[in-house]
Length: 285
Image 1 (cartoon, rainbow, N blue to C red):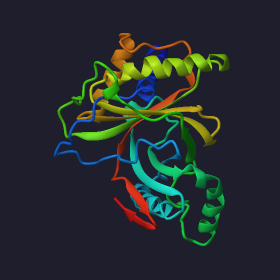
Image 2: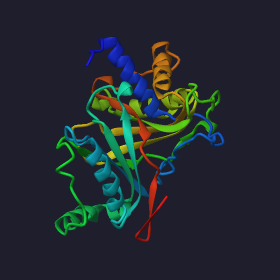
Image 3: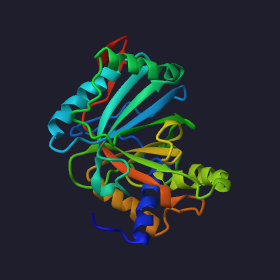
């Protein structure tokens, strides 16, 4: 993998962070070529968000994808898991390899979350769920987040542009960014900047629809504590990512010393299939 210079690396991180701390444009009417939707997002304040990052073992991609599709459906049979969706991470947008190749996203009722570890253990023991040990690389990990606030719409920000970037088929994608303040004593400034400066700045990237911030409450503790997810429309995800970076480099998007660029991780994610929902034990789209 080609090494990034320090300046380009920071710019890339800032680019992802810009996306993660704010959300973009007005929600336009869905075009006929929009192949997927992501109604699992945003997340209610009474729910938690579970992100599972994984990748297949060498030579097991097809088997892994079949297993992960079934695994998502098996999750939705667990009481308290309300919705789920699978994503492929866009390699050209990743700051590092920390977040692996694929992501599954689950909307969980926060009140049921404390009981789920025991529930999963019992289902694995009874053979109701397959851990995927034969097809999934052991590097997989999960992160559990709680919303800090309701989602922010581009409608609330002056100067936003709902027109997606690019000329290809229209898609609805996510930007996922994990970050921390530069130092613990800058946490208040970090959050003020994210909410009042960075979010409006990033919402002005063409095609951005929505953003929501979260704080980690479980999972891989070595990764950043704060999460921002942006939902956006695009006809060229890589070009959209470049536009995010250009706005940072040209200081259209204003960064802050309180933002911990060195430890940040981020990626764009495109849906593999539709969001699925649990309806009293039945799975619906």
